[in-house]
Length: 137
Image 1 (cartoon, helix red, strand yellow):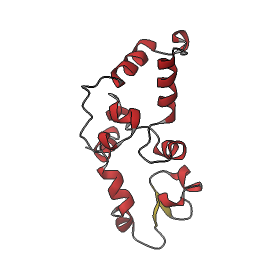
Image 2: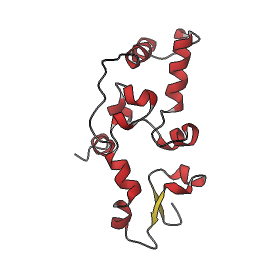
Image 3: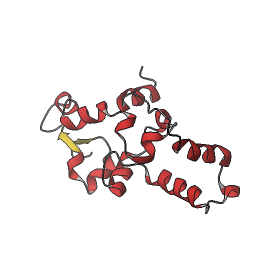
């Protein structure tokens, strides 16, 4: 942040100051990186997530999307992303208009797979997923 605060997601710090892991003006970045906040984030695995994210076949791709939004609306860093919850609930209720959903067949298949009791969550850590997405591994 402009004032030196270091966080995993900037926008969330405007209303949830607990996401600030430290301040580079007052302590070295290496110490902040080793903080409880970042250690926790690096250790998260898919089965740690709540709800849909814990059962989503696309977790390796989106990693639960924006944790800031999920935390603000769901109340927890590991809450499912509200957009996915909304789409899923619309599909289950039969209120989703398949004609206006891009790639509707894939979206409906995703909703079916969420209900698959034999699904096994990814065992990769969130951190490894981020490194892979940014081509750092």
